[in-house]
Image: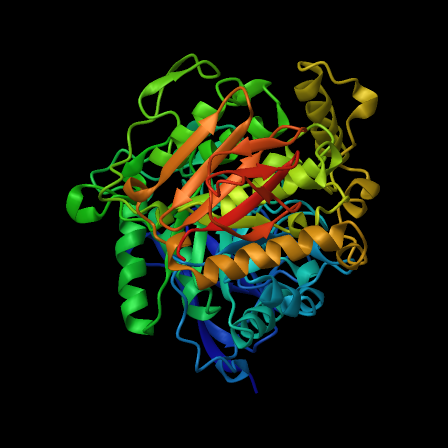
Length: 580
């Protein structure tokens, strides 16, 4: 006999709401705050949904915990089983001093599931990272995409393994000593399968680059804000996630006195206290605005960190020589040195790409550099290139090693993108699987038009809807053991081990960082107390006026007879120690 269960849903727009449970309809009662409720017999695993007014369509629950039959189908009753956890001894991990590893479940392995990803956790432990950051796993329409087209934020994509698969993955990560961060998207909803606006004003008239904006400050925005906050807390509470990467927070339009991000920070801190383990909030933002990571007591939002594209741009442009688009202001060693010393390059300075002043200075004596994430590449910096080509497609392995050394020896929190540690040859392309022919065609045409403006022929742009675009983006796990990939992998492991061993490299204060460079000779030296990183960005040998005992290198350096200088081969780096 089924047990009684209470169902409720916020739905201010319809005049009538009926509950559909396993084929039967039940009238719901409208309560305070436009919350409809009904208590009816139901069992775990049962299918349910809501029928609004006289339209017979059964819509999924806006807070659906599981969608085994797709985002247009009824929801499934499901809860995370506490008895399945084995991580009771997990006390969490601080972001400061750690290294983050970003991955996409669908392309991390050939199978593209949580369980298959678990098989490679030993690789991540040997590599030396502390956190795994998952690209979005919420439910979206279709079988595969990047995850930023989610429409049911509380459900886990079924093709990855659903909520049970995510629970097993997080549990396994914790057994391996790895924290888990989850990328969440609260600034827009995907173009297919979004039924939320039929229930209430979840969206507002404003637009983001990806669709209608979420209603965070308009009429009836209170329940929408609660919907967002509850979703964020659920991942950390029910799924034991250790923190969130908050997608494109600049697209969260909120003109209230207490910004949504500040509210989330307050409630996350409260949850952290209750759980007895650290919980981390990391924003994605390109505004170079320290407000995000400024403590609430000082007038900021109180987040723990944010992605810092300026470090990526400064390193990539200097090493690769690329200057198109937003790389236009970057590329010089002076720019790279400035960014390594002050955190932002654009800090109230003119951005030619934007055509205006951009950013504001970071208080380097009050804000630790560990609050800024630095990287040689991300899913965006690879996947949003026309062909999804990784840096290894156009740089030497020595240049890849230089980029890695600059990030891993910097005072920032390093983040790696899956496969970069061995210079993966597989691309990471923009891929979708929209079932609707019209949307599929529009997506492919939009991709072609976007890059045609930059001179790319249409025939060179991979079709996002072609299954081969997705399949070719999957990592090749035979590469890490094959030359020359294995050599780069060893270099990453050595750099990460040195970072873990030497406190000079995890010192987060930018006012203790020194940088020297020679623009003409194309060398740069980063000084971290007694640890010195010397890099030769040119193709010919160069003498760098830095001495010390070489402890790591790409190609063997030679010492100047005086001991005060080091000769580096082309496209190479050396880490020197002056402690002894």
